[in-house]
Amino acid sequence: MKKTNFDRYLAEQLRDPGFAKRFKRVGEAWDVALQIAALREQAGLSQQQLAAALKTSQQQISRLESPGYEGHSLSMLRRVAKVLHARVRVVLEPETESTASSKVAESPATYGARRASRKSA
Image 1 (cartoon, rainbow, N blue to C red):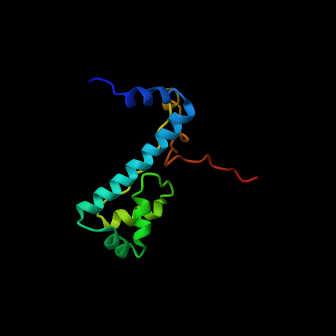
Image 2 (image 1 turned 45 degrees about the vertical axis):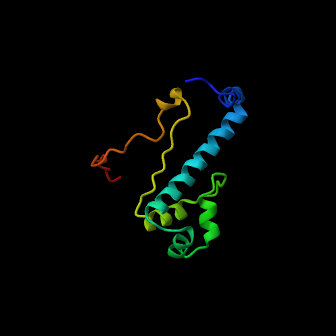
Image 3 (image 1 turned 90 degrees about the vertical axis):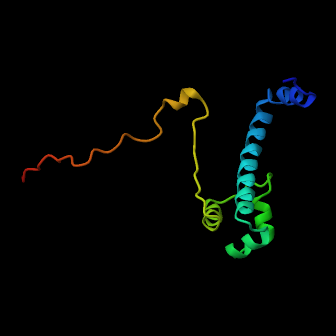
């Protein structure tokens, strides 16, 4: 497939780490917005109807479906998902492969381990 002028321009811009970071963040917000809008449409609801079910305003639903909005709260996403018969799944991933192999949490606890008995002094 032949690259367009935009493809070449974007590739050039993505060499700038600051731009690349902002571009990725916008992409993540865009994904959330599109998912909400698609689920709402699949449910056959307008923004106004979804707002009424959530006891919020149509403007709030419009904001949630806006690609530039980054203020999605987990509690609101859960409320939206419940009304739309969906589930929320948040995935945090390491940024690089080198951090992928490092431990993120403590070692699992050993259950049923016995404590050494204490002698009375």
